[in-house]
Length: 375
Image (tube, rainbow, N blue to C red; front, side, top):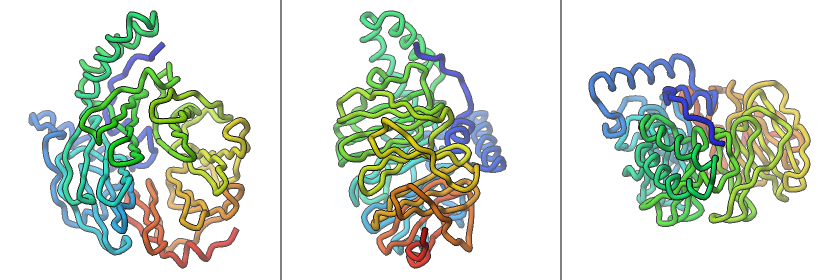
């Protein structure tokens, strides 16, 4: 049975999902949203303000778009870098809500998601963006699907229909938290309360995936990860789901941890690694049938991970640590850093450097620093 949707501020949902934004930033965004609502301003329709020193804003995700880097964050801020993350400039955005994730399947086409259930798309490497979807439209899609399937789904169908009606009534107040496209046409987005949608035409049309995910409790879904022909969804309360193709149903994979997973990465030979709350990380060498706990040094929430071009794995946490593994996630050692922040996302630039988003903006770690670390 689907759990009822609870109305919570979208900034709180983002904090819950990532454990990243400082209290000050969260309060600031909440105050802006409240003041805008009182003034009758729709943040989903108001373009993001162009700000001085935008690269020091709270940034929540970063991705490679060919040789370019694109980062997204608070108040609709989108940043571009064409020099391996050494400098950044702000790109126009059609919304002023926090953007939580960004992904490019190729150098030109990219998507970003965020608060209010918003989906933005670009076809020019992030220079310009257009809105494709918001939470109200997503609710309408879910309601139409729930109505269609309710008669044959019995009690579960009735509960899903009731929740879909409530979702539509509450409006665009539930954030999307991750986005992943396999090419310029096929992709999916996930978010709070089990929200999940897919597209097969580049975002022109979207289909709800609620009926295809074994998620009856409506767990928040934080990350999408694709590897080896499979797509994985990681979420709260130890939730992990796997599908064999874009059209297959997602089946639950049992994991040993009951807390939230904020990310996933794989080793050179298909080793699976989950990481998240309080420094918990688990590794499987048999496709998720069995898991072993990985020592990450401190009980600090792990927020981002990346497999490097070398095959090594890096993880970042909310206190500004970066950890590196040369043995496919079996062991990790810290990367020495001179600049630290509460990290939220990581990408590798074309020159091998690490570029991280965080609560103090963008941080670059030179390639020689990363490559020089040993186990």
